[in-house]
Image (cartoon, rainbow, N blue to C red):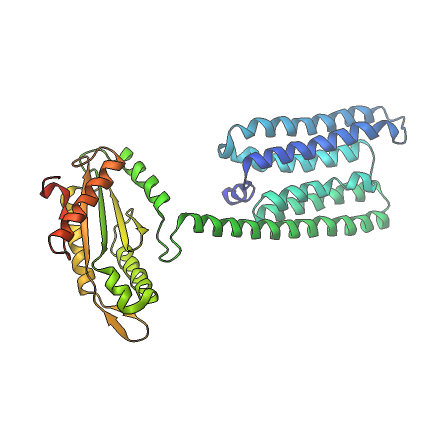
Amino acid sequence: MLRVLAWMQPRDHNAAARTIALLCGVGVTVTVVTFPLLEQSDDPVRPALAVSAIAAFLGVILVTASVRFFGETSRIAWAVCPLLAVASIVLVDLATHDASIRAQIFFVFSALYGGALLPRPGAVVMAVSSVIGEAVVVLTQAPLREGANDLVYVGAAVLTTTLLLAMSAERQAALMDVLEQRATTDSLTGLVNRRVFDDSVSAAMAQHMDASGTALILLDVDRFKSVNDTLGHPGGDEILVQLSELLVTTSRHGDVVCRLGGDEMAILMPGCEVGVAERRAEQIVVAVREHGFTVGVTAVVKISVSAGISHAPTNAHDARTLYVTADAALYEAKRAGRDRAVAYDRFPVT
């Protein structure tokens, strides 16, 4: 049951609400406009059924409009409303005794919704529901041969529409994922970029301004210019990629590693005490010093890094000050001879 509910949740709730309201609105409008033009019948129940069918459509619109304000919390309603719309189409067709193509065409509407806005399993549910609804309408109100013929044609249209729209929506979703990844990650190293890192720093400081606090480690490669001059920029890029992998694999769960630019990296450690951050920075310096970085096929290069540590609330109470103090600590590490980690509170600020 929970899996089915997940299948029926639209990718975009606002777009889904608008789409359901539009499709139902079109259905109601066309039904109201064309009803007086249909062949008249002496059946006294027919007008009441027609009114009930239209009311069902309007109910779908109202429910969808109200669900829209609750977003993802109304999972059951999001699952029920599209199926209720299919049931309303069946009710309208039965009430008007209409099994013509003008009545059957509305079953394609549900395929449009499912294929465009639901995950593939949900789109299949909507397509199958539409085909079942189509079968009920044509097989109960038309001669068997004619009804079966219509069922094959309309069913094929429903299934094809669903498949094409689902494939298109999946390609678009994959493209959006790629674009989002490119917008949030560094293209060379795959680490998060500065924008995402800044947001993470602000969030961490808002959530961990307690006894443990938040630590920030800034580090860069010692004499990286000479590394580029010796190995060339492609060689320097290889070292940055491998350094990034080393930092990620040795980080705690929940830490955020970022390439700020050039050879400068940053590690955000939410919920981290000062002493833990200092030991972590020392371990990084040692790990980099002992690691052999492979450039090309066989060349193994040794490098070192300098690191500066700052801590909030010990050294800072806002993100900007945390950056400034960590950068000051990094400068002190380089001034003191490089290949070391320095905590901000270990020296006076100048």
